Length: 281
Image (cartoon, rainbow, N blue to C red; front, side, top):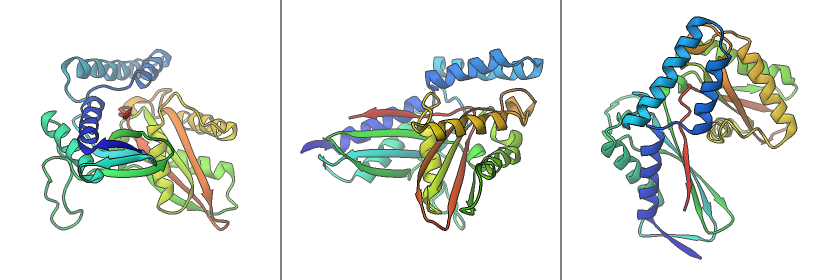
């Protein structure tokens, strides 16, 4: 059994959100640069150039890439041989989020009640926390600040078990089509297939956190990812909705067994700022 203190967890969460909000991952940056090179239309190329310049400026000045520094989503893989000492795991994560958003001067976007009060909590807490017990004596923490311009364009559909692959692709493509320019394309798309009504969207969010360079390990799903990406880009929405070849830069699918009577499919739309940072402690 290995002891890990809540201070270590809190400090790690703070570090991850401070980094994620001002620096986009190298592979995501490379995808944006590749998209710039592939565009032939003048407007699309100009938009991509501005996006890339913004990324460079954010990293250089350590100012957020986007004014919407998101709602803090945290995935925590906890080794079953870990003993968390000194307090509550949930409290530690929220303390790390609060510290990052306060010390980083990031916009606090969370309200305490979704319907009635809607009073800002002032420090972007509470975070959305997904925990998973795994083997080993380590903890892996993934921080994903999720902006709501694109989150609001996400969708869930309970398809019939007799639905075809084309039906699944059509739902994903229609979701992107309905999002249009409002989700700040070029996009990253997470798709969750299977599970239950509440689990498919978690799979979709988890798919986003996987990173653009990691196709699904199952060849069938990897091919489906490519099929979806091709169909999405055929829409021609393009960078920021001005038309072009790059409506999406990547599609990631996560799947899970489901009931014989159902086929849940969730689409989590993310703007071109696919922010995520991970660390194992």
